[in-house]
Length: 412
Ligand code: AMP
Ligand code: GLY
Image 1: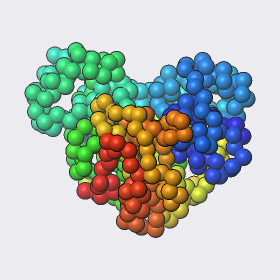
Image 2: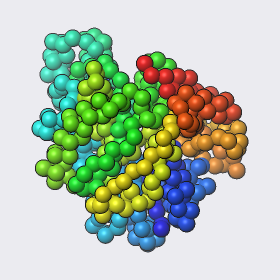
Image 3: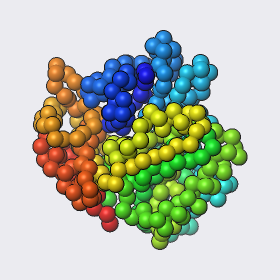
């Protein structure tokens, strides 16, 4: 099959590696890919949605998988479907569950999906008045897409007022912050549940735990994700049942009632407080770095999973009874302004399992090109052994300014 994967991160490299492992005959194309994807397929530079559609048509691409969210919100699935091209992902209307947090909250409210108490604002005075009357901390979110960086936890009115002004007046997050959501702070543990929707049923993957903050002990600003483990040891049977009843099934009801029908991924970003799940957000694509962590544990053929979803068929998922840990190596300066252009050493060692995220090939050398550079993955029979394996491999890799968290997998 000719498969086009849209995106250029570690997630897309990991998807490609899994597809290729399941079926070495697949011909892979990446738009635009990175220094890792070019070793398993062809990287293509396509600047716009139109160019992507034209490429898929001319190359007779059999299946397109969309990694990142921006094009989903732009309507890539609708554009492909109009041309009768097969694509795995939500249409524009459903992608708004990720692209507009105010819309997502309204959906959650209507269908009884449990979430933090909240209010949406476009007006500064109203937002300030609301924050004055509240106990802290509070969470302030830009409603549009912000690559995981549009969420601010504020500890007092002064911080709240600075953030509200930054977002609504100074446009710190651009258009993404034209509207904000202010919500109660939930103190619990986070779980990522990725799932596949086939148009009539949701099939959850094994759970994962992402570490979003830049510093150890979950301190500092949010990032796209600094590492993950799977399965999440805190996602017990009891919590899983609560998730199904209070998050997944009400979501399914909402999707069907509102005719938000598609074949693609729904990623539930949960906070669990006293064994009760609260939905922090929907993402309508695979997570990064959850994907790099989870896919090595999936026995089932990924192409088959996607084909079955696209045909509205039942999906069977078979998981290894094992654990995985993924450590993200990032560039100096991330998540603000990341340094790039640094040569990466030590990856050639054949016992390292990795996905390449922000790095490109230049004169036969792998050079950093983004904030999150590499994902180093350990899998083993126990979580502890998986963590050790990942960090042993991390110790063999180096680039100037390389930063990583040393506590990935340590659960609070
Ligand atoms: P979101 O993009 O909405 O998932 O938020 C990004 C991150 O901010 C989450 O993964 C949490 O770590 C944190 N966060 C978001 N909402 C809340 C909340 N209501 N209470 C505590 N932390 C939150
Ligand atoms: N790791 C979280 C995300 O992909 O949004």
